[in-house]
Image (cartoon, rainbow, N blue to C red; front, side, top):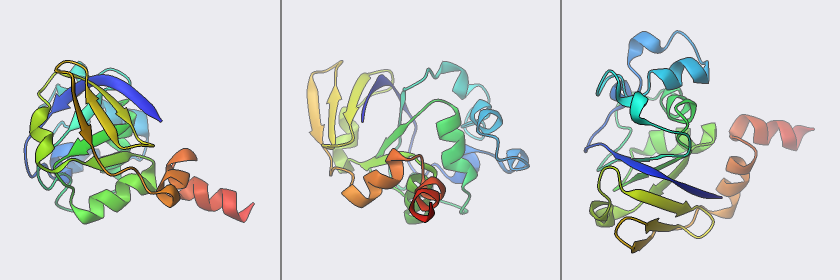
Length: 163
């Protein structure tokens, strides 16, 4: 999958309550959650986002409580890919389970600035910063995880396997 969009950069240690505050956990509707994505960080943050934009986090993105609502809200905001220095482990697995692509870039994350135009190729792990002309190589999504992403997450993957 290739995604091209604007980078929306946030800081280090963005927890799941910043991604989707607890007051919105009364639903799993991706539209409602998406409309409130990052409301714990900035009330109107999501209004800057367009479909296929890329969320760029720092260190330990997705830390805090384990809630599937966090990756659902990111997807509901129209963001199919999150790049970060690294991810909290439970968020990492929840993201893929919900169908959200997550790529760890380590210190190369600093080569991306807020509002840069980014192209991500999840099959190769290549991240092109169109604004600066820089290319970053992340690890490609492993084939077994790509299968989960291709069908929209773990629930759909299991349904497909059981059919």
